[in-house]
Length: 169
Length: 133
Image (cartoon, rainbow over all chains, first blue to last red; front, side, top):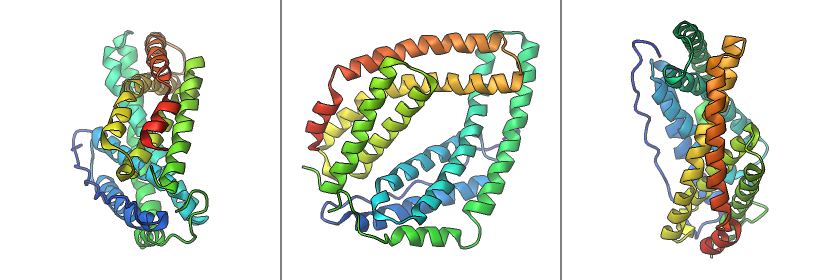
């Protein structure tokens, strides 16, 4: 964000493969924790730096993949699952708002209208974007990445608590 | 034939995707377009996570056939969110918002065409069969 913004390469997810021979909870325990670890590592890098809008959007896409993969295994977990999913949704919400600002700033020069008005709008959106980034940093440090959170979250995903009901193998 | 868990989860997402395609075919409003994009991502996530369960070439072909709809829906969605943001920041509708709305209408027409084309392929029946659901 701003002049010092730099592209932070988002950590490549380590992708484990679904094993047809294993029951769904075992697959969940193997697939989800590495995806979570890669996502949290990527977010940590961005929250600690001055990332570009592209890097933040990359993290958002990363989060979507994690969220939708987690949702596929919802039948394998208990109620705490929704708390973790909620955290992920909240982080995605801030990143989504940041991306909306970046999208508007990207298309604004091509739009018709008085330059003065466009400059004013650009200024307001840049300010909103800077505030949203501070919100993201605070949220990441306080909710996603504070001491022990990753371990608890990863441990939860590594230990599905109940056998899958509907459609379980 | 996919395993029970993979089959149930994938079929559920395919059904939701087809429902969303039909909704956008009726009216490409803001919520309908958003729901369609989410349903495509969820269906693709099922194809990715349960990849070993499906014939690779068939799954790839299905994923690819969703690309034009996703791309078009993405442009419409972008216009929707930036109109909202511009209105919030500008406090009054302006030439900028009018131009964005015009672009949105054009893109929604293109999206309708892509969706209609896809629905004529009977995704629920044919894709379910190809994936062994």
